[in-house]
Length: 275
Image 1 (cartoon, rainbow, N blue to C red):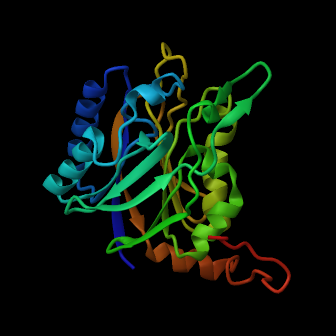
Image 2 (image 1 turned 60 degrees about the vertical axis):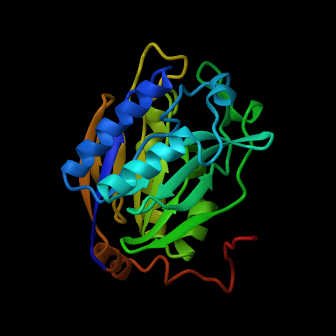
Image 3 (image 1 turned 180 degrees about the vertical axis):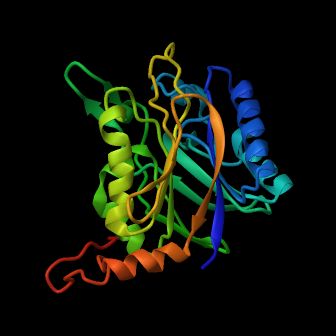
């Protein structure tokens, strides 16, 4: 197992889709110039994170944003996890992350499995299910870089999903996400570090930059956790690009030191995918 140069693009998102694509392009190119061979964008990077916006900005697979991601991945010769976008499929709209190869081919499509429906008294209320449909697939894809898992934001709250992804061989799990100012300060870092620690894999989360004028204010703080629960990097709230080295050889090292995966009592309990 080798290393992966992972680029995180924490970008500002506006109400102008064309501007968002230009911002994303600049960030992707910056990451590639810094040596990134795999780049991750934030959740809903091409539109505001608002229920009213999802139907308006939604595109089918193969649409403008899909084409943009495919073309730039091919031009730069990189793997590109295109954050997430509202994907229209028939009458449904999904919160979807596309993964592209250096040849511009779609390798995977993860539709957010767990919709973000929360109502915290005195804090955040948001109901994705008012406009979005939940996905029904667990996403792990084998690439020359390694086995990559994909989840989106609220998915990280569900440890069973990540255990199944680990059982499917995921070495690095990519998570476009947009925690808010209620849950971000208390749960963001903790959730990512625990999923990495529990499953002894690398976890990367990429958020939009914080915009205090938006109706939904993202926490920011994009990060990468290693299998020991150490943060390899964590942004602040501002826009920026960082490239982080993921050493997959560390997986064997940490798994040998504390045999969580090998020591499970599958004669007593197990977590399995049902489809």
